Amino acid sequence: MDAIMRFKGLISSMLFCEIKTHDTELLAKTPYRAGVYQASKELGGGVAQVQKTVSKAQQLISREFLTHIYDDGTPTGVELSTTRPRQVVVIGSLREFTHNGRVNPEKINSFELYRTSIQDVEIITFDELYQRACFIVEDR
Image 1 (cartoon, rainbow, N blue to C red):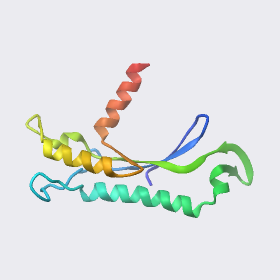
Image 2 (cartoon, rainbow, N blue to C red):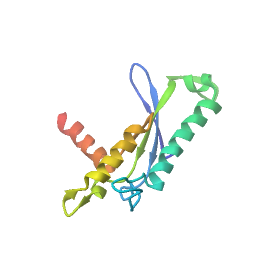
Image 3 (cartoon, rainbow, N blue to C red):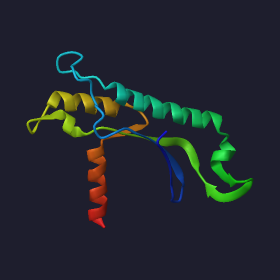
Image 4 (cartoon, rainbow, N blue to C red):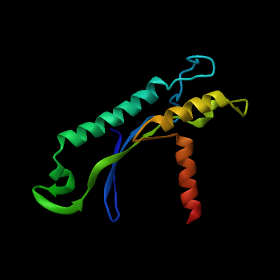
């Protein structure tokens, strides 16, 4: 796993994150069928990896350990919610779907259908993450 984050708030929760690179392919180079593109091996693998890591974490780490974090046996006062930790894969760029400044609608549609069909895993591209960060910073 590339990152495990804990959010502070009324309920402190965990997020598991698998990070690929900005130039990792999102879709296979050639269509599976006319107008149908399948997820790349790296995208499918990243999703499977984050799902398996969360599954193992929920199974192997006792509920007491996740609920109350200890430092050498002493409670730290940090508590976590362990119900369905958020899962994120940061990968690639939407520029993959453009050619000569124009968007390929079949590729973008195939990608959107794939990422919205994956339950419990948010798939976000580096350019989308950058735009979110800009929005947050500009909003302040």
